[in-house]
Length: 202
Ligand code: MN3
Image (cartoon, rainbow, N blue to C red; front, side, top):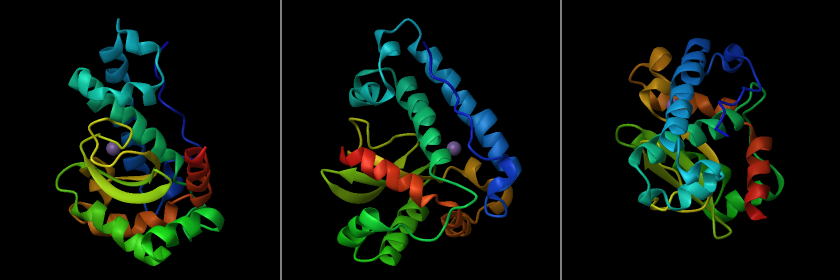
């Protein structure tokens, strides 16, 4: 058994003009595929290979660093594709909106804080919205780390993430990471994020 590169639910060009087709294609077929292949290679012959990825992350500090980096790359991108849509943007509703208001005051304050975490991540990494003990938290991780890992400074169930590695935006935005982040909100699929939120509450 091995981990599979997921198929996207939209075309590479579907997120334009906010994320360009070339970036999406290279990101999925080259970067994400490499993480997936290298993750499987790192697991070969290990008893970990039969575990769900979430279980592997729980003790990731005890495993070779290739498992942390490539397992993170496999998982983080799978979530990232899933929480975007050509019909995205706008604001969440219902219980998710209430939880965001409770934790951050308002949706616009949440957006500002999440954008700041993404902009401020030095070098390569991710911004996260995490369900942590029933509460929503924002933080950013370096490299391919994520909140399911035992080494994470904030632990919990990730419901939204944003890739701020240069490979995620450089072809279209070059050094303008804040512009990429601002435009990215237009493709966030709040119904997918809400689904993750309810999964995390279970
Ligand atoms: Mn990436």
